[in-house]
Image (cartoon, rainbow, N blue to C red; front, side, top):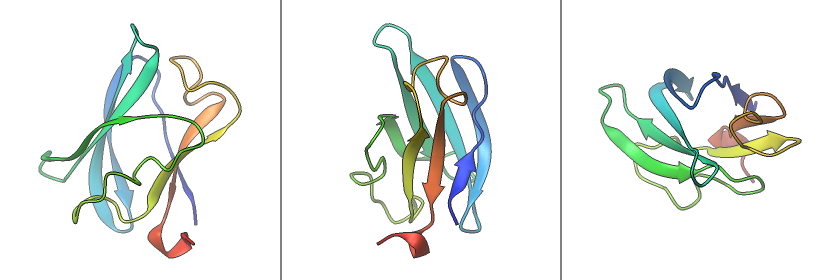
Length: 103
């Protein structure tokens, strides 16, 4: 079952997210100069697992970021609009597809 990751207002935030029974910290930052979001995924001890994932519509965001401790499923952007500062969480959402639901 796909999980929608809550998105907070503002240009930077971090939050804890449980995916497939594992607790992660998601840290998001908006690059105002270039107009895009990046996402870091940290473990329960706040050690980086994957950093600098650029949030782009139509791409499997974890495809090139496979590490043993990273979430085993896939992150994708869903919805309508542009994943910019105002679009994320409003028209565009970050979704996690569990590993068991992947083709």
